[in-house]
Amino acid sequence: MARLLVMGLLAVALTACSSAPPSTTGAPQQPPATATAAAQKPAQAQTPGPDANAVDPAVIKALQDMGASLQALKQFEVGISLTGERVLQDGQKLQHTAVADLDVVRPNKLRATMRSARLQRDLIYDGKTVTLYQPEQKYYSQAQFSDNLNVLVDRLGERYGIEVPSADLFLWGTPAAPVDNIQSAMNAGQDFIAGDLCDHYAFRQGQFDWQIWISTGARALPRKLVITNRADDARPQSITYYKWNLNPKFGNATFAFTPPKGARPAEFVPLKSR
Image 1 (spheres, helix red, strand yellow):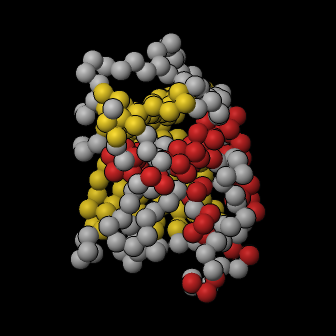
Image 2: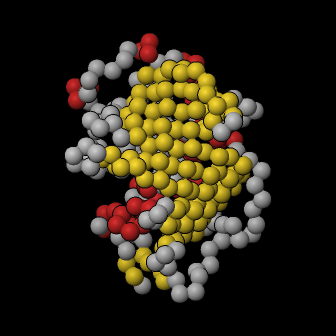
């Protein structure tokens, strides 16, 4: 059995398709729902933040309502389109794109297909086994797991350094996405995203500014997310679009993994073993 370092060969692909592409300089970007540590850095290490009046309670309520809508979804399919920036040592920015498709049945089934020009990865969870497959190299890694998707997202990152693409979709509306560390929250008006009218909100949280566009229809769902890393003087951004299907038709094979011919197993390696 081949032994692969997850951070070196597996997690990189997931990060490339997440809401938080890494920057060559400065601190890496993080999704807003998981930026708690950054937001709680000692005050003396940061410039003074906005006062409490800068946090509009109605905006926080809108964010919480969106989280509740996400957690209430029993099954869904979402297409994700990401544009991220890398910053070179001389300050020049390079844009890269990636796409991902998530098929989800709560509480414990997931198929995530991630594609970019450089990386291809599939993540499959059937409620008993989580599988990470590399189509190009034909390597697959598996681990036994039996908890819900929210816990899976947390454990993959904590134990193996693997980030599920757009992991915020599983964390908003849960204690893992606190709102008490938000320094600024404002209503920025409305915009159309792919023809849907959305409320536009802007936040400041630690070293990150982020904006979200939430649909005004029957369900409050995110349609666009922009994250700006203020820890880097170049202010690199990531821009993510979400396209929702709330009535998907999943077959029996959607959440099953059968190793293709010629595929070889590769052991998951915990972070402490790197």
